[in-house]
Image (cartoon, rainbow, N blue to C red; front, side, top):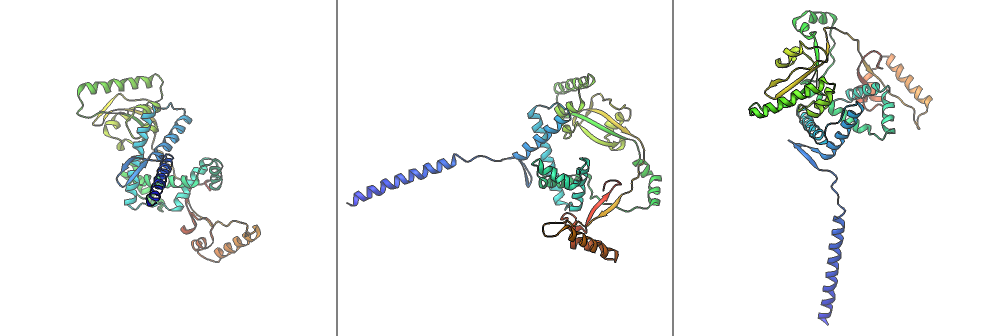
Length: 356
C-alpha cells in the first residue's frame, strides 16, 4: 500500500514539475529585448533607443532640407559618434556644476516657440496635438544648453555695461580684433594617419579630387560632407560656424581670407588627413547694438475654483501692492502660477524688442 501511494505521489510530482517547466518556457518565450547599450561612455551609456530616435530625427531634417541621405551605416556611425561626444560633454558639465535655471530654459523654449510664430502656451498645445512630449523637449533643450556652456567654456550672464565702457572697448586693440571680418566656413575631412603609406595617401587624394570635381559640377557641398566627411559636424553640412581668421587654424585662414563666397579650396593636408574648405558666407566689421529688457512676470490664471472676476480682483490686489512698494520677486514667489519662473522671482530673462 505504501508503494502504491509513493508511486502516485512520484507521478503527480513529475507531472507538476513538467507543467511548471512548460509554463516557465512559455513565459520566457514572450520575453523581448526592448533596449540595449550601444556605447559605454565613462560613467554613462548610449542606448540603442537614443540612437534610433536621433537617426529618425536627422533623416527627417535632411529630407526636409532636400539633402540626399548618406548610406544608412555611415549615418548611424556619425550619429553614434555625436551621441558619445554629447554624453562626454554632459558629464563634463555635471562635474563642473553647470546648471540651467528654469527661467533660462523657459527663455530658450520661448525663442523656439517664437520662431514658429507661437507663444509658449500655444507651442505646448501644438506639441500635445502632434503627440510630441513637451517634457521630453524641455529635457533635450536643457541638455543642449549645458553642452553649449561646456563648448564655450563659460557660464553665460547678462552684465550691465555703461556706454563709456562700450566706447572704450571698441577703441581698444581687443575691440578692433572682435570687429574683424568673419567667415562662415564648411569643411570635408578625409581622415588619414600622418604615418600612412604613400599608396593610402594617393587613394585619399584621388577621393578628395573627385569630391572637388563633383562640387564644381553642381553637387551639394552639404550632401558631400554628410556622406564622406569624418568630421563630427558632417551632418550639419560640415559647418564650422562663423569664425574670425584668427580663430581658424593657420592652414585654413591663409586660404579662407583669399576665397570668394561659394568657392572651395584645393586639398589641404594636416596631421588629421586632407581637408576641403568652402566659404559659404562672409561678413564685415559691422557693429549692431540692441537694447534688451530684463523681464519678470506674475502669472495668474482663472480656473474651476477661481472665476475670471476673482482672478481680475487678485491681479488688481497684487498690482496695488507693487505700487505701494512691495517687492516684485517676493510677490511672484508667493502668487505666480508659472512653475518655471516662480522661484526665480518671476524672471523670464533678457528679451529683445518685439520678443514679448
